[in-house]
Image: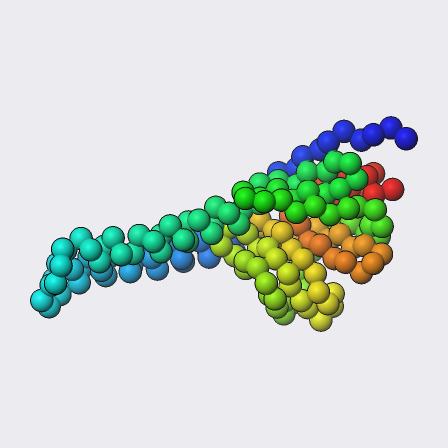
Length: 176
C-alpha cells in the first residue's frame, strides 16, 4: 500500500459568532479601561498615581488576548492515518482507523451544552454534549461550516476546514 502524502487544510475563516464574541469582549474591556481613566482623573479624592487604575486593567487585556491567541485553530493536518488539529500552543491527534462517516453538516444540533472548553473566544473548542449525539468534541473556527467525523466506537468530532469537500475526500481516502 502506497503511503499518502501529508495534506494540510486551513481552518474556515473566523465565523460571525466568533467575531461577535471577540468584538463584545474587546468593547467591554475598552469600556472598563475608559471608566478607570475617567475615575482616575475626575473621581473623588485620588490616592496614588493617576495612571495606576489604567495599568491595573492591563492584565485583563493580556489574559483575554492570550486566550484568543491560544484558542485559535491553525490548521487540520492529515498524515499517517491521523487527523492532527493544530492550535497555537498544542495539537490534538485523532486516529482515522475505524472512522464510520465523515460528512458536512447543514447546521449544528440545537441545545449543545459545553462541558469543558472555549465557546467562542478564538474558536469553539472542547468537549460538548447534546441530546442527538451524546458527548462529542468540536474544534471550529466557523460554527456555520461544520464537518462531522463519526467513529464506529461512537466517538464524534466536529471540525470546520476552509474547503469541506476536499477535506472530506482526503479523510475518506486515509480512513480506508
